[in-house]
Image 1 (cartoon, rainbow, N blue to C red):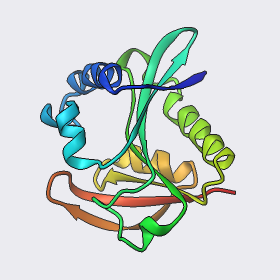
Image 2 (cartoon, one colour; image 1 turned 45 degrees about the vertical axis):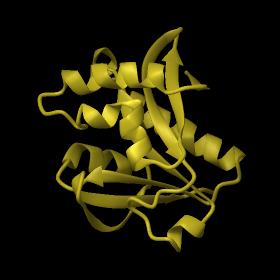
Image 3 (cartoon, rainbow, N blue to C red; image 1 turned 90 degrees about the horizontal axis):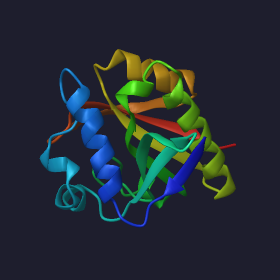
Length: 158
């Protein structure tokens, strides 16, 4: 598995739209999966695609600050914030989400980060369970105007 940092978000957006359109209930609004939509929510971010055997299997965003969910004090921490993690539909059920998270943990350690943080819809039991199994501890609940009821989770990089 190889993770590639992209110079621009267009390719990432094309793939995440495929994932989003495959879901019975979309996880993200169509407007949020545009360059303008990303700019409206994130000050700065890096886009990544994940490859296996030269095939894109998924992707994610990494931020160094996330004021949309986390407090100004928490944003002073040395952390990465993970957003829009996805695995393409044809690769579902193969454990790729967990494998991608392990790679993100390894990268955070190499970059000397103290924390990895993410959010998850409160009622998405499958995703909450995945993050718990990967040692992301529940930090608190957060009600977002644009995302709804969320759980904030944190992993202490060792």
